[in-house]
Every structure is written in C-alpha cells, then in structure tokens.
Picture 1 (cartoon, rainbow, N blue to C red):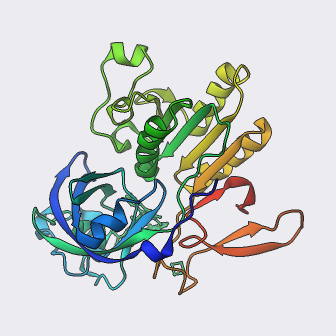
Picture 2: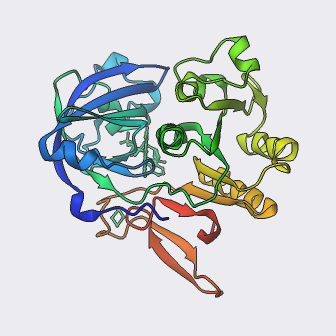
Length: 314
Ligand SMILES: Cc1cc2nc3c(=O)[nH]c(=O)nc-3n(C[C@H](O)[C@H](O)[C@H](O)COP(=O)(O)OP(=O)(O)OC[C@H]3O[C@@H](n4cnc5c(N)ncnc54)[C@H](O)[C@@H]3O)c2cc1C
Ligand code: FES
C-alpha cells in the first residue's frame, strides 16, 4: 500500500517553537507546536514526508559563535524555504507537536539555532510521499546515513505501534562517532542485548552503529554493516524490507545489496528544493520506466522523496 500524500490536507501554517536545544557539535533538536488547522493537517504527517520552513526572518547568531567554515555563507539572504523531515509527530489535545533534528550546514540552519521558545515561523506541509508498509513484511531494517536518521526514527515509532508483527532493527552510520546525530549511546549491557541508541530503544527497537573510522560500533560503512547482518541473520528470515535515508552513494550501494539479496528497498532521496510542491521542477530524479529501457524524470518533492530503490537511476 503506497502512503500517498493527500495534497488537499496540506497548507501554510504558523508553528510556535517550544524548545530548541543543542545535542552535538552541530546538531540541534527543535520542537514545534501547531494548533488549529495546522494541528489537524500535521497530525496526519507520515514518516518520510517533509515540511518547508521559512527561516528568512530568523536572526543570525553572534559573529563569535558562527563556525569559521560558515562565516562567508552566513550573510546570504534566505530567499527560499528549506525542507525538513521530522523525528516524531504527536498530538496532545488540540495541538500537534512536531520534533525536528537538524545539522547546521549553511545560512538557514545557522539561523535556525537562534530560534527560541515562543518564536513563530511559517511552515508548509505535510509534503511528499512517505514510507509505506507492503503486506506480509516480517523484518524491517532501517538504515540511516548521517542526517538520514530523522524520518527513520519516526518510522521506527510507527512500525512498532501499528505493525507489531514486524521486527524492526536500525543501523545508523556516520564518518566518526562525533558525527552520529544522536544524544547518547546506551551502556554496555544494553548494547550486549542489541540496544545501542536510546532514540530507537525508546520504541523497543534494537540498533547498531557503524563508523567509517571505527570510533564507535562496526568499523566501516553502514552498508557493510548491513551486508554482514544479512549474511549472518538474513537467510533464516522471510520478507525482509530495507528502509533507508542518507547520502546518495549509500543509497546506490543499498540498492545493489537489495537487488543481490532480492529484498525490497525504499529510499528517501534528497534534492535541493525550491518550491517543494511540484511547480518549479528543480528536484528531478531520473527513474526507470517499468518493463522498458526508457527513463523519465520524477519530482523528488511530489513523487518522492521516498522511492522504490529499483526505480531510481543512480
Ligand atoms: C526531504 C528532505 C528532508 C530533509 N530533512 C532534514 C532533516 O530532518 N534535518 C536536517 O538537518 N536536514 C534535512 N534536510 C536537508 C536540509 O534541507 C538542508 O540541510 C538545508 O536546506 C540547508 O540549508 P542551509 O541554508 O543551512 O544550507 P545551504 O547553504 O542551503 O546548504 C549547505 C550545503 O548542504 C548541501 N545541501 C543542502 N540542502 C541539500 C539538499 N536538499 N540535498 C542535497 N544537498 C543539500 C549543499 O551541498 C550545500 O552546499 C532535508 C532535505 C530534504 C530534501
Ligand atoms: S522543489 Fe519545486 S518541483 Fe520539486
């Protein structure tokens, strides 16, 4: 079943910041509260969908707290909204709370970290198509590369709440331990039981960590960690599905592994997005036409961002 976006439910809403706190050198958690029609629209937000945030009026941090590598870019005006997915969306009475995990990489995300409690910002959404759960799945492997973690955290929650017959296991990778976008790793006993990251353990989901330099968990790319897991545990299992978000090279390698092992694989793609609603055509993704050698361009914002990995030309 495809988790379609219902464009009739999306709109431009006002969101109020309820907290914004630093969890790593360049990682922050932002909590937004929506009420009225915005609360109703975002209560239907599905893992893998996204929202466009207007950060044009947010203030820049003081010059001494701007990282040196972003000093030149920091002065750029923020003309376009920026796309973000959420790590969690909950409803509380007549409010919807959307939680966002972001990394400071440029002028908009730099301004985002000056947002304070009770500031408000304009948000468009829910946008795009999220992950879907085909019938008959028994094991879901969530593979996150770097900042690909947010939609997979949200998916972990929905899979455990609505699909308790599916065993969900997460694998999160980054170049180094410092670049893993999580608050903390669990103690040794939890890790021996297979629970490594509290963000997934909170939903009863086991997790593994992989770092390219071996500073935490498996030493090597997250795709090698997945491959090793499939070699050791995959053959005794039916109906495995991979859900992934991360850099394109990682998604391409996952697609090869999924094809090799005959496993379904859904990937959340990233493109620079100007409008986010299928108008500007700036977010093309080249895709195969089924049963043909032809290719077509689909829109990451409107047809995706989640695609079946087999349809994407990498
Ligand atoms: C569907 C979707 C969901 C996203 N969810 C999150 C999220 O949950 N948390 C988060 O921190 N970020 C997320 N992003 C990325 C986020 O939109 C960018 O980091 C942000 O727009 C950067 O804005 P900036 O002005 O700070 O930096 P910019 O100056 O705009 O970008 C800094 C650098 O990051 C790269 N970059 C920025 N945006 C993209 C993009 N869309 N695709 C590929 N490369 C890009 C560029 O190479 C650029 O040089 C998401 C992107 C998409 C498309
Ligand atoms: S961002 Fe404008 S069409 Fe996709």
